[in-house]
Structures are given as structure tokens and as C-alpha cells.
Length: 295
Image (cartoon, rainbow, N blue to C red; front, top):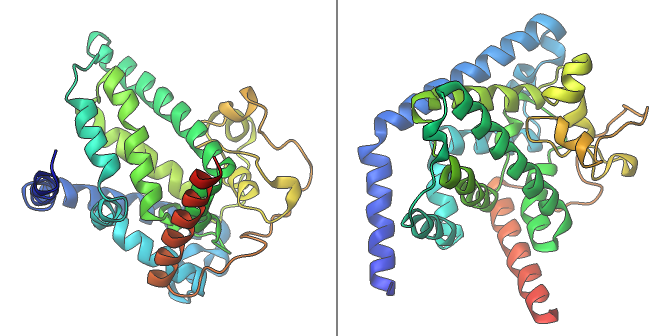
């Protein structure tokens, strides 16, 4: 593919996404907003105004301002365009090439409920390992730092991700689609489910959810541990949704210290949203080039 065809294909895909798929974008925006609002209402009911995400959003810190900008980009799907530009379109074109091959789509031979269930488990397993690698590999950590620079939690912190993080997530999400096929008929259920868990575990609810939060769906309290500055909490609770992966692979935090001060011990982020995006991009490229040079 020459450079002209590369950019022509990119522009064509952008047009198709933002013009021809506008109804799907609006549908996703409505679902996202409804689920976020529902979790905020639960916060208000159980922990009150003073401790709620809503109060933080009305009187935002510099950290929360970054969350607000991230939420706007995600809920309007603009993050997809920015991610494609900053990653030079590589993950998205790799995905296109990947899908040009024959798909297995084994899920088509299963009942609808089984297809959706296995797809969710498979996707979450991949995201668990991707998350661990984002913490382990230097250049990838420079990208993921943006999410961990949050100094306080609120419902929309779930969308505090650098566009490069989004690009990598889009690429790895291809694997279960390639093997299982996307359960299209139930995609709205899948989308709402993922959003609900993300909003809930980044909320200000101090819930452990008992055995369910420990072994099934990661609780807000366990995800706070993952965001903690405390060295004792580092590299723990990587689960994206299903907490069982941390127990299987030995990354669940079993300690008694639940007092988590959030954020990074040292960071140059939370200055200005656009400046932070660019700073992460530069840090990633610098670290990646250094790794290649030293390899």
C-alpha cells in the first residue's frame, strides 16, 4: 500500500465512521451518558453529595478536568480519530489486514447467550494481559501513565486514557472477534455492560461487594488499590472486569492496607490536557526509540 492509498483509505474510513455511522455514534453516546448518570445517582443515594463524583465534576481539580476532556472525546467517539492520527493509523490498518483473512467466527455455531458469554470472557482475558504488559514494558507504561495520573476517582475517570492506549486496545480487541465473531445482535448489551462496570469501579463508592467483588466483577475498592501510590499496592488487581484473573495469575492484593492515596508518586502530568497528551506522546516515542537502540 503506497502512501497515497494509505491516506485515501484513512480519509474514507473517517468519512464512513463519522457520517455514515452517525446513528451508531449517537446511540453509543446516549447509552454511555445514561449508564454514567445511573452510577452517579447510586453514588448520591449511598454516599451523598459531599463524597460524590457529581460534586467533584462541578468543582473540578486539574486532575478531574483531564477526566472531563477525556469523557467528551470518548463519548463523542472523537478519540477514535485522534488515536488513529497519533498512532499513524497503524493499529487500525493492521486490523483491516487481519480481517481481510478468513475469519474463524466459531461463535456462530453457539447459542446466542453462549457466544456473548465466551466472547466477554475471552476479551477480558486478553485485556488482563495487555494491562499487565502496559505496566511492565517501559514505552507502554509511558502511555498508560496518563490513566494512572488521576489523583482522585470519579465515575468518568474510566475514560481517562491516552489515545494511544485506545489504539492498542482496539488492536488487541480484534483477536476475539477474529476467532469468535462479534455477537452483533447483543452488542448493545455488551456495550452497556462494559460501561457499567467501568463507571462503577472508578466511582467513589467504597464498596468491596464481598465475594462477588473479590472473585467475579472487580469492586470499586479493589480498583482503588490498583491506582494507589502505596508501593505495597503496585502491580496488583489488574483485572479489567472479571476479578478471577488476578486470583489465577497471582496478582490479587490480599493485604489489609486499604488506605489508598491515588495517583503517581512522581508525575509531570495534570498541567493542561492537550499539553499532557503531547507530553505522553513524546515520552512514549523517546522511550520506544531508546529501547530499540539498546536492543
